[in-house]
Amino acid sequence: MVARLRTMGIRDERVLKVMGNIPRQIFVSTAFVHEAYEEKALPIGYGQTISHPFTVARMTELLGISEHDKVLEIGTGSGYQTAVLCAMGANVYSVEIVQALAEKALRSLAQLNLRFASRIGDGSKGWAGYAPYDAIIVTAGAPATPGMLLEQLKPDNGTLVIPIGESQSQKLTVYRKQRDNFEIEELDELKFVPLTGKFGWNQSPVKR
Image: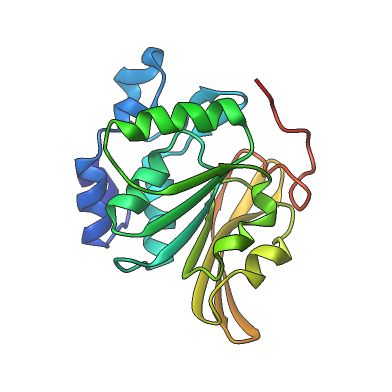
């Protein structure tokens, strides 16, 4: 997997090392364990997926995080991206709107003894109680960038990575904050599951 990610353009050796060390199979359903390291998204239930390894690597690389950075993750999902961020040395705060998924992710992450903060709630609103953040990553596609997430970035060099677009296709978008101004960069075209919540597609969250 790591060799393939290199050929696909991932250059951050820290990201490659971390992803090479994390057992991705513990974050996928038993039926898909044999595909855990393939370049594909896999279903994890409740209409959600674990992203392609390249997508996880690409988004993590774009965050440009350093050890001890405070990182907000919107969409815990399987917990795999959470594990990558934690293993990068970040202080991670993760929000998941689907309670059953959040609980399953916590069980998977417990196997790796990683420390982070998590809550169940509307991630499109961020997690204001621990703001500001050095970086924010959104692991679902949004119709527009939630203003509350931009507000929760640190004023100097705070970075938001978020897929923006229609429900079937989004562009990976990077915001870099400098006081009240943002440098905005549109990159890869990808497809993510929809961001739900008040500032997402406003769909009703799945409950247990």
